[in-house]
Image 1 (cartoon, helix red, strand yellow):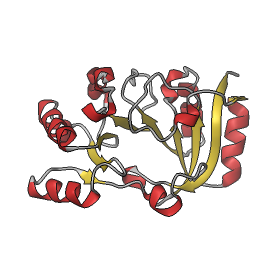
Image 2 (cartoon, rainbow, N blue to C red):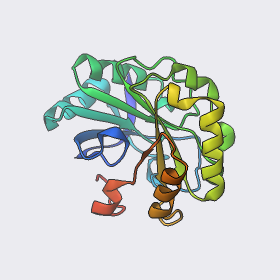
Image 3 (cartoon, rainbow, N blue to C red):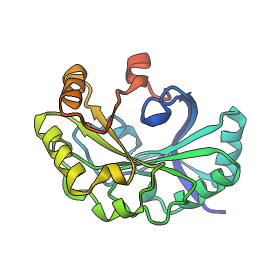
Image 4 (tube, rainbow, N blue to C red):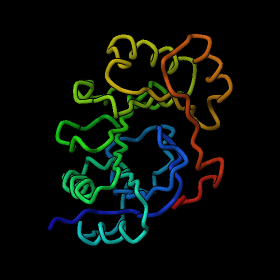
Length: 213
């Protein structure tokens, strides 16, 4: 059975997406080729510990939670991630994948909820967006725009329209903590009547930047 390099496995409340607030087991895979300006998980770029999929599954089961999020880093940078998610779904977990949108998502098990970023200009990595992925999104998936400033907001609106994203999946707008005022972003969404879900990073309001939360 293949092994994956894991930075951490922990149990917490989901801080983002449309399952925010639900008890969730997080599997954070090591490694990411992107270097987003606002990244808050740089500690997952390297290091980690190799674990067999069977050992990962056993640890997840031990928490007794129903929801599992596979995150990073960039989880799809490790090919074994696909098998891990398939086996989690086989165990009847509700599985979500947090991915940068820079890797092909066509091979992701259809039972997995894909939460895919489209990197905004302030990330410094918008040239890495793989727009071909949009065709593989379904109504249970989500596209996330992390908004750092007015340019990001205008850009995100343009991309939404150009790719008719609201017809593919749910859309999330999230402010960069410390850069984009959350209330200001919420006011813009309401003023423009955007068909999006506003979200803040709940875990940061509860525990700050503590790891494993």
